[in-house]
Image (cartoon, rainbow, N blue to C red):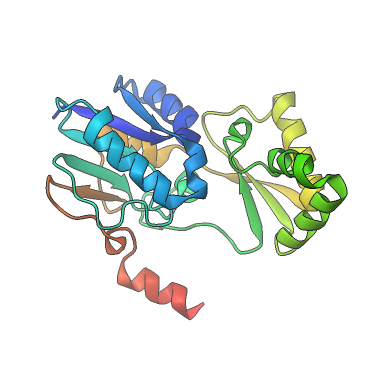
Length: 230
């Protein structure tokens, strides 16, 4: 097996931390994290990476990403593909246990991790919108968008030292803008560590060359039925 990591840019610091901790020296191909806003574009980026960016010498692709709005739906490749069975990057970062749980997010909680990337940062989003609409209008928009999120959950895991002032300021400013209470929640790099060290159990999809990937690979029927009953 000759493996390579295909990582969402939002998870890159966590991939680096996992590689260092596990003593694994695998190459990494990075996907533009900003494409998360448009799953169709992220899907095309995945296809392009698999077909053109990853050299043919690599027969196994280890994916540091989740289902992410259908990015992987109905795709097949001519290499082995291994993907964590989670709905998105947040759920991947929240995993601390060894059993299949595709979504650990809680209703009413807005999650922040890989803080300096800005992908989930309310502060950076506010600044962007303010240039277009002004601060007063942007705050009105935020009040509407985040009215159902009274908690800002900061995911603590390897890859970020949240005691640094730059992180503390980002967290405090974001919480103020969305009028939420800050909570620190435990996360980990467990799934990434298992991914890159070959510990592929029920928490992973393992597809051989030519096998099709689908939503049902990520979410088993019992979990989908439970979600519908909530």
